[in-house]
Length: 288
Image (cartoon, rainbow, N blue to C red; front, side, top):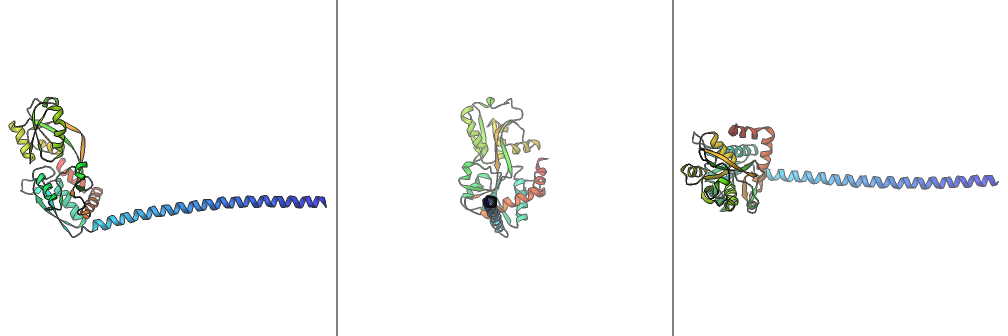
């Protein structure tokens, strides 16, 4: 009888231990399941948010389709914009923006004004945007909304081809020239105090080169690809003696808050043309 009671007691104890162990496993499984559910819900929310953002962006750039936008541009800023031998205004900016417009279904009406005049027209709401090799800077972003960058430009310092000047140190105390309101002029201003430069301002790149050729200025400050393009084609008798350590991204600009659909359409079109190789083809036409 005692043995039977002991056996029953042992069986009851074993059952209790098994019950407690089973409950512990069940609790852990439940917690893990809850964690998995929470994680899955979070992932779903993130995916939904990303999808919603993409949908909103698509809806925004689709609003540009069918519209006509008036765009200010420069006059003599090869290879970004210039008049070719057939009298047509062309260049990287012109071809690229036209290709983006075709891809995204909107139309461009060009206003060929010069850089400073284009920016002034933008601020007076006389044009909807500016596409003129315009560098994206923190100062400009306070007033304008920019597209994604389509090119990065360092600033070059160029002197006459037969000049004995070989470095910035050789420029000390000299007159130099830059185009008003450009990053070239900004770079010149940064160096002016250190090298005791007298800075002259003009409105067009072609006038800068004339100043150097005539001796009115010893050097000019211009975007590096612009100078190299002109030198390679024999249009100017200059040589580059220095380039800035930094480069500026270049973009299309609208007044802050204006035409967000145009900026979105530009970005989407640029991405598509980059992916299908059209962007590289346009650059190769001017740089190879």
